[in-house]
Each structure stands twice: as structure tokens, then as C-alpha cells.
Image 1 (cartoon, rainbow, N blue to C red):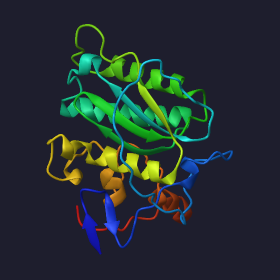
Image 2: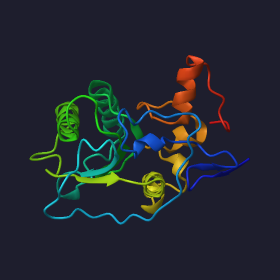
Image 3: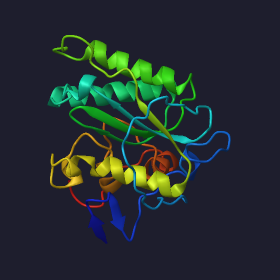
Length: 222
């Protein structure tokens, strides 16, 4: 079995993610073990003016939000870790299903469902505020940009493209040579079945539910 570390995919055995994540059916979002990882797509990052948001669509959302004026306020080990804990706290509180994430020095990408409790906008506000209150050594003035980019994910191809874009981000930026070397992303969950600070909704998680949380077999040693 070969591992393509730049893609976050094990060749010959593909980690699986939910078709329900981009479906319009009620109760969508939880992974079924038979569902397969979508194919890649190209994504160009931009934040448009006059942004229209489409919520309560039962689709997944690709979110990007940045520190104020793209300053690297997140670029500290303890701050990276704190953000992940705040993300997991928010996930539990609003019942988010998080499919992928990456925390970068000055911005964050998330691939997730709409929350079961409240609206996506409310959940994002709570996440930003809870983190801002707890972050040590707060900068003077605003911490976050006011707006965030939100794109509905409407197809398997687009879902796979966003997943790969998120996991490649640290490598493309030159922060690490391999995606698995960046601790603050969901990449190692998919390739190593690693349990991190944030619960990822994936085939591995679905299997854990079925087996009652039996010990995981890692695809290769950590």
C-alpha cells in the first residue's frame, strides 16, 4: 500500500468521507462506511464583495477567515493548540460535523457541515469570540477580520478539491516539506487515523462508532 503524502490519500485504500456532506437530504452529514472520497478539484481563494450566504441548505461549507489585515497572530505553538481546542469546544456546543481543517499563521480553512444548533454565522461568531477571549498576549486592536469567506460545496468533485487544498496549504506555503509534518491540520487523521484535538467526521470515525471505540490500527507508525 503506497502513501501519497502530498495528497492525504493512501493509494489502494482511500480514506472515505461523507456523500451526505454535500447532499441536500435532511439529517445529512454523518459518514457511512461505504462512502468514498471524492475526486480533486481546483480552487482559487478569493473573498468577493457583496457576498451572499446560502445557509440551511444541508450542504457542506468551505470557510476561510483571516487575522486582522492578514497579520500572523496565530503563529505560535500555544496559540495554534488553543485554536484547535476552541474549535472542538464549538463543535460540541453547536453539533458541527468537521470534515477537514488547517490552521495557518494568519488564516484558517474549515470544511464542515451546517450546525444543528443555531446558524453557521452564529457558530462562527462564537468560535472567533471564544478564541479571542482566551488567546494569550492579545494584540492591540482587532484580532480577526470582520468577514469570512463561505462557499457551499455542491458536488463530490468540489468536496475532494477542498479537502486536498486544505491539506496542501502548509506545503504550498513552504512551512513544511510534507503535509503530515504540519500538526495543525486534519491530514494525519486521514492518513494515520490519528485522533487529534478536533473530532473529524470521516470513515474512521464512523468505524469507531460501530466498534465502540476499539483501538485503531495505524496505517504506518507515527
